[in-house]
Image (tube, rainbow, N blue to C red):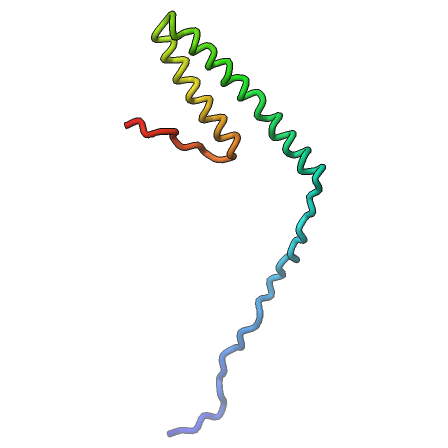
Length: 100
């Protein structure tokens, strides 16, 4: 066997040269900040709740006079309530019940 005159080595693995941003410090939320945020969120819910209540009133009035109009009003009310639920939970609302 022939003796090697030089040895080829593989390069060493070194730490990544990517600079990671420093970890963010947790933000301390005061009670006043939390109260202001909740007030804004509840204020945003006021209009959809009022619209749902008005549509429920329309559906109740239409129940006695016109059946087709009542069915439309109840269907619209269901859509509005699901939309309100999406706003409240901040995610897409699934069906309330199985309609199969």
